[in-house]
Length: 481
Image 1 (cartoon, rainbow, N blue to C red):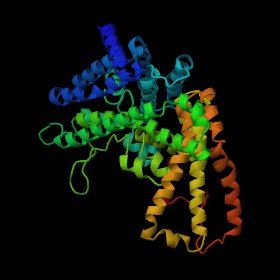
Image 2: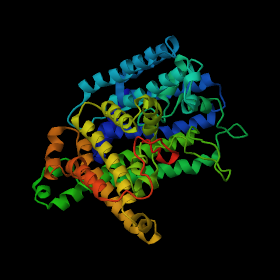
Image 3: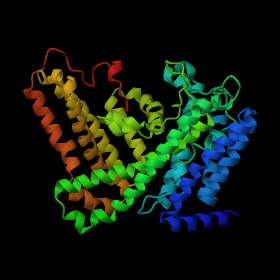
Image 4: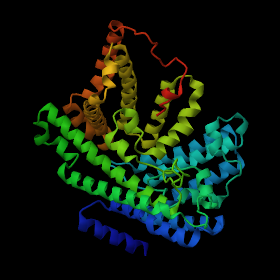
């Protein structure tokens, strides 16, 4: 039956002219909707054991459909998660063991599974499971060391050791095991224990329209992406004479357009899987100030922020929110001992680079992102130092000009960097990056740092002290990722 299903997927992929592995992943994501309906109809009032069993059976079935016999990687990691959280909980050794068992396992898998293309193999869902299980081990560690935890760590700390069945259900939950969203065991337990249900002990009906909205948004993004893939067939186009004969401006412009169109593939996946999580009830997040239900508990894409964000903080913080939240809570905030926000931020970004894989482009992308964040903070300092400029920029009539300027800078800067991520192999992205004369690296690593130092020497200091990294942080400064 499994082989017959694979054959049908292959035939369908040939019919609609798309990659079979991509189609299989998309069907797996879409399966979250009927499974969510089944759960909210038949299982939401059942005991945790019954619900956990349903999640494990459904998740394993989806894994078999998506990965085949390579499912043993996830089964082995689930067993390791049980052993670590139950036999060495709350110890430093548990954190080390988690990274060896999960991250180490994945890196070995990357070594054997990666190719010259964007790979959709067993490592694709496994990388989601890796962060989920590492986060689980760290939350159990916090739960056994609550007296020394920070307030944010106490919120997700786990004191009761999870059973093997609960860990498997947490790892294989059908709306979060393939492309996210990331969520904690504390949220998962609240969901299973019925804390998110309404007064009638049913899944809140107010989530239906938000779920539908995320689904429609995901479909829209996917249609735009598919159209864009035909319009700009990367990587071939970026090595063609048609592209190379264009002016520098138009080469960079086409890269920026391709970046946006390619990112819509990820946006579609995040929105669709989030919609299924809302439909299941996992995303319930209490009431807003008007007393209406909020459904952003597993938010993975802030659409308006992604489309209209005007700085790196707003745009980077708008997508892959679950992974960014993991990075903030389980990595960045645990590096307070470094005493440097920039140092902790750089270490976090390098961790995420390793998590993505061995390709050089991943490390260059995250180093470039760090340079962009630093340049942005320095740019804000320069604005404060220019007499009268801040007052002019605060006037409402300047808003359209600020938005256009910011969007152009963000899109072109991120488009250049995305070449090294989207084209994967150095042999593939080197030519397109070279065709742009390495402009992003020159601007953010050479020109701007020199210009900033010059401006700091010639501009007046102003009446107010400009905050630097060594100053005590205030709430307004805590733009942590």
